[in-house]
Image (cartoon, rainbow, N blue to C red; front, side):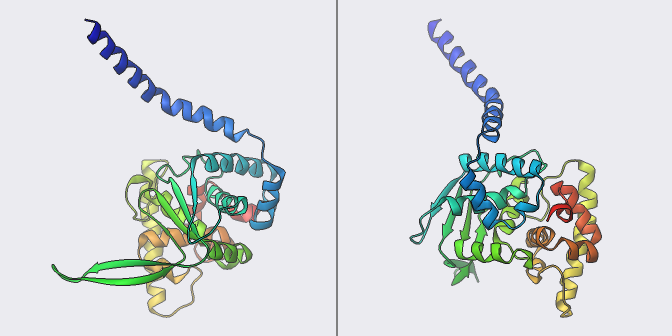
Length: 274
């Protein structure tokens, strides 16, 4: 009888902890959001994130809160001899959290670690060419978002992107867009949307725009969206996100429906503040 009671209590405690975990997480996040944001952190963001100073005070404060949560929940690892500094963490966190403004932040739930190299890094890849043979290659990369729990970035590329904000290329925005895309378990260019009815409009607009980009690239035409977006639908969403935040005027002018979809998804209009 005593053993049965003990087992019952253990099960009850486990169930209670499982039930309370999301509530406790939100309480902890609310506390972090209201935590003091150091002045020297703000100075780093002002220097490294060109769009920060154009945001209204309310969005700046919202961004501060998201950054506090992000830094508390994600692990930063220096690779290739790179020492992780406040500048590195804040530059990455601020741009990653820019994608979360005005949204109920899940803070990239699958992401655990951010690996940062000093510059471009080499990755060995294998490609099956038959049942018995594979082809091995070495690729030079500037960033990648691993399917489940890691993002890899080049600090040299990040610094270049911060100095060239309006060129439509941003490795942080790109890789974190992949994280948003993968929240539903697949990388297919369709992130989690608010309502079931949103998926039909998203599919119609993105499929048409993706096919148009592929066609324009084949014809050698100049495009507002970088040619890398024609690789596949997942890369199209990531590249479109870069364009949306860095070249909003061009995107709205040349791709108004795509711009409207991204504006609805991110609940943010770059043309108002950036």
